[in-house]
Each structure stands twice: as C-alpha cells, then as structure tokens.
Image (cartoon, rainbow, N blue to C red; front, side):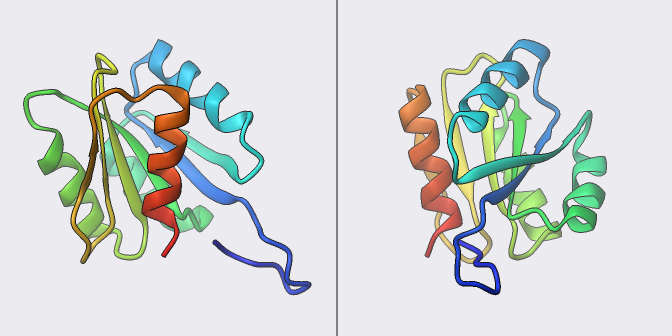
Length: 126
C-alpha cells in the first residue's frame, strides 16, 4: 500500500479494462464501497489498459477475461506492466485470478464481493 508524505495510507489505484458492461458496473460498485481502493481509469481493451495504467500510476488493473484463456491475458499484461498487479475476472463472473510478476497466481472460484476484495488486497499488498 502506498503512503502519503504524512504517512497516511493512500488508496490502491485501479484501472478497469475490457470488462463487459454489467460486470464493470458491479466491480465499480464493490470498489467504490471500499475506502482502500480508487478507480482511476476505465478502458475498453487491454492495449489501452497498458498505456493508461502507466500514465495514471495504477497499482492494479482489473481485466475481463475469457473462461477459455484467462491465465494468458493476465500473465501477458503482468509482464508488460511490471510492478502493477493484475486481476482477471471471467466474463461470466464465475471465477477470478490475480497476478503480480514474479509471484504465483491466486485463483478464486466464487468471486463474491468479499472474495473479490480479498483477492485485490492479496495481490496489491506484500
């Protein structure tokens, strides 16, 4: 977690990327209700996510993934954005996976709001 000059904990900065409309709304509401997270960008595709994440100083990118191939999309983005955690949520919201380069991925099979927040915290905190 980042800290201000005064030592206060700053919220984790999140970019949402390639999430289907309703899933984007649900994830945004979950994040907005958690004081330790802040959405700083929302983009339509993964190429734009890489650019925006760097420009806004994101700590985490949440991406929509296909149930057919979620690990590759998240792992590729984690490699392209070292130091930025990635969480992929299946488009049908039946699963989620978190990546941070150099660490094993973390899978969640039932991403309810508390489970999703726990996953976000686990990939963004040492």
